Image (cartoon, rainbow over all chains, first blue to last red; front, side):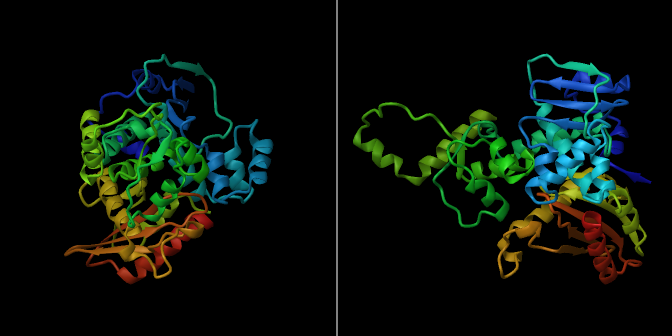
Length: 265
Length: 132
């Protein structure tokens, strides 16, 4: 009766163009192990995705401890007690630290989030380590088809907000524009943009899945409030007087952003 | 301590319940679904409901007088209620102790559903889901 994102995608008659043919094959052979890709790792059990991690996004330890859901001491206690048995997640529930619901919400969110980055297009070869399992343990397996479909949907979602991906990975700086109407969760992201931090850094500080940060950053980029920091050119060339006058025109900044966005299409 | 599936099945026991889901409003991902969905596609429904939830959570017009600072994971809005000729929709924001943007979506039949009761029960379920 109950279905999850996992079960739903399996009912599709048309599957989306594969994100990773290797992953699809592993699902078909119901493989168990770890798929190591350029930008992250997916853990499979019986062909279903049970865990994912990527350096581009905070791990579940950061997500759970940053917001105060779990004291770091309790986290390490669970890793010590249940890590070797690959039951850290279950231990957190059984020892009363988290409800099943909290664990599932956080872990499922983290899984789709890390999978989005792990499945990013890459020219580097992927490897599969048969039999490898993650020490966190299984919480709520999801199908490969569901993870692939969601990953594609997320790419389109970002593209629809603002097509330029430059700010996804680069150090970020504030764009100088100002908008009093930035919503609170975006404001938290904007406040951490300092010319050095990347989207991944900001996500770690906030304890927030990095895809969520990207959604906010694309919105902020569309509003002209955030951009990829560019290394300053060394000697500023002397510009004719008219250029200085032209650059004070507020439309210029908008036109530049539009041009960048069109080029990224 | 209920998980996502138990929470949704409990929501489906409310009078007139036709479908329920747990949705992340930043990404539009349905983390769990049960029953029917208004357009026959739980994923599309989740993405559309997520847009509505995001608007209400982000726009200052709907924030409480003290401001919407998301202190202690508290969303500024409690629920969003939509009524139509043949149904009710109740979106209930879930308060979590970790950073998240999750809501419960309950779809009710207009004839059989009890909007006031469902709103209260859904709020209790949202609290129990995360806090036990």
